[in-house]
Image (cartoon, rainbow, N blue to C red; front, side, top):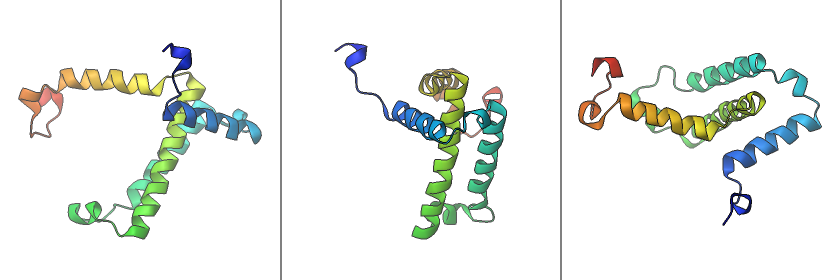
Length: 122
């Protein structure tokens, strides 16, 4: 099967849907990297608010309505991140794979297993 025959992945489909969504509303001029980064940061803050003051146990077992609110905040974060990657011409999945490879080198299993230390303290 050639690359042209491969089905698009979910991230690419989401990127294309977001691109169409913005174009239909003529929002491209507002979707600068700076504006998208600021919006992403704001949405991440809204996500964090749901967990503020909760214990670890409470944060892991949210009631259904709160879990749904968290899901929608996570979606906002994802949407802005995917849109920003598109505007900047960054293949987000490729960047994530490259970052995982870097982290695998920084956090070798034999040194990092069961530890939360930063790589320079392993």
